Image 1: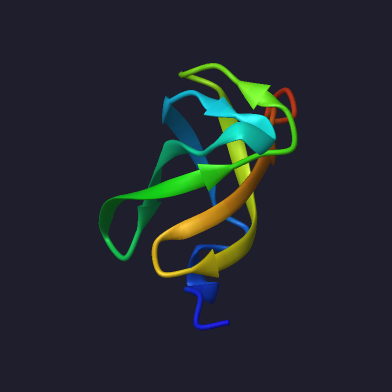
Image 2 (image 1 turned 180 degrees about the horizontal axis):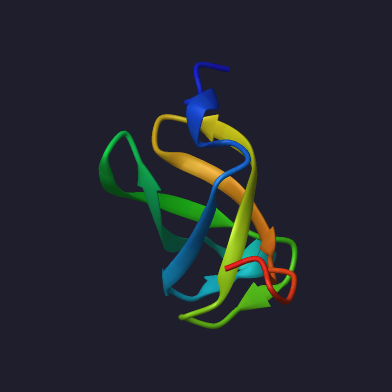
Amino acid sequence: MNGDSSVVGRVGKLVHATRGPDGPGEVRVRIRGGTEIYLAWSAEPLPPGTSVLVVESRGARSVDVVPWSDLPGTQ
């Protein structure tokens, strides 16, 4: 797969809800000194505004995400 491995491990925020296996949403990720938007796939539907962790790149501008919460006191 010709994915963007530099996005894996980054935390982003959903700007459009994911629909689980029924379709992707969109995630905004801070990367390369700016922000970029990727199609975001998740196992379960997630609402907009959810913080997510990018766990895998699916190819050109498409990633798999899971919900993410920062640990208290790490911000």
